Image (cartoon, rainbow, N blue to C red; front, side, top):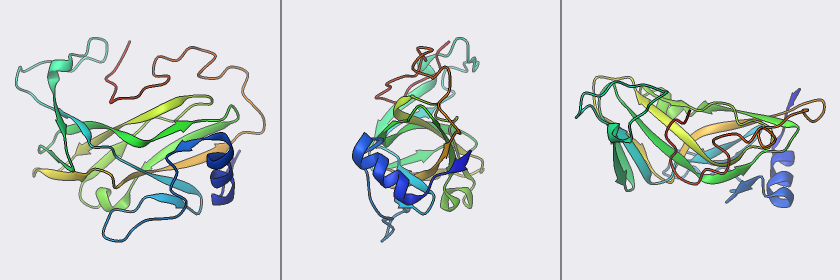
Length: 184
């Protein structure tokens, strides 16, 4: 399994619509960088946010998750409460090839401020807007900026296509367009 370079990512974005919209080079002037890099793609966070709240003192349960644990906000900046988290989504829509697995890492600009970005791997033949989790590990409120870089996706090409893809399994998060809460 090898990591794929900028030339392959560009070709797949242009010919297979692997990333839409696709930014062909790093944009960094006055923003947290996004776009194509040497061996990855830095995706942007959209302006729709679900901020975790403890208003109802609910128990967090991945098997029975209450949407009432979140407040919805839309705008150019999201404030994450101390020691809390926010769900968001990428601006970009991804279509992953059958012989590729994608791993996501957070941006160092956020990590150096105690803001951690988490995303599970994008499996072969998964598609959609990626739901992002921003965790504020600090005792202070923290900002996340919409339409700026959030994380970097690394594309790992397998030696051949998998026998069963995410699409074949009818994955529950296939084709998501909005910030998606946990499903069982």
